[in-house]
Length: 199
Image 1: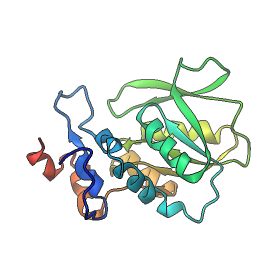
Image 2 (image 1 turned 45 degrees about the horizontal axis):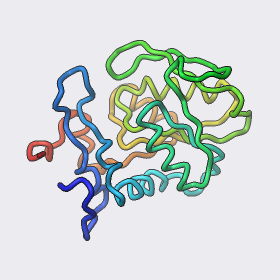
Image 3 (image 1 turned 90 degrees about the vertical axis):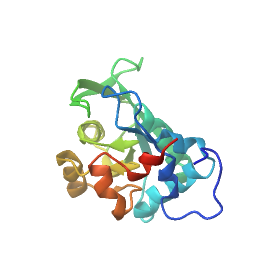
């Protein structure tokens, strides 16, 4: 599919077909969803779908997780007319921060941080990432927000895999993702049928 062409007929989740398979091996994630951001209609359609479950929620701020969550999170924040808070990999912020250790999808132990001069008790925050595979990164982001007294309204990502961590997040937080029910099993098996014809 042409990455920037906008189809005249757009079924629910049409933009998912823009995602690309991993062609570089096991050191990388199994797919790259970021191609959908290149399409002028795909990104707003994705954001619209992500926000549907939260249409009746009060959201004060959108937080995005370093790095790809910055793109999607910023688009969500702009759509809502709200501010955007970057949750960074440790060592990138030159102001006072709070840190949280976590294990990411590649089983690497890492540390993330967030500035301490924005979140206040009572703030209602929507946390956005590009993809939730094992849930470790999102859990750490939630802790950073909640440990400053703010409330996590919910979490949003293009997909939430039904891993142990993904299921825990779905059971404990309001969530949204863009994956239709008929594609969830393929997402959980980390192999999309349409990748067979990808070029």
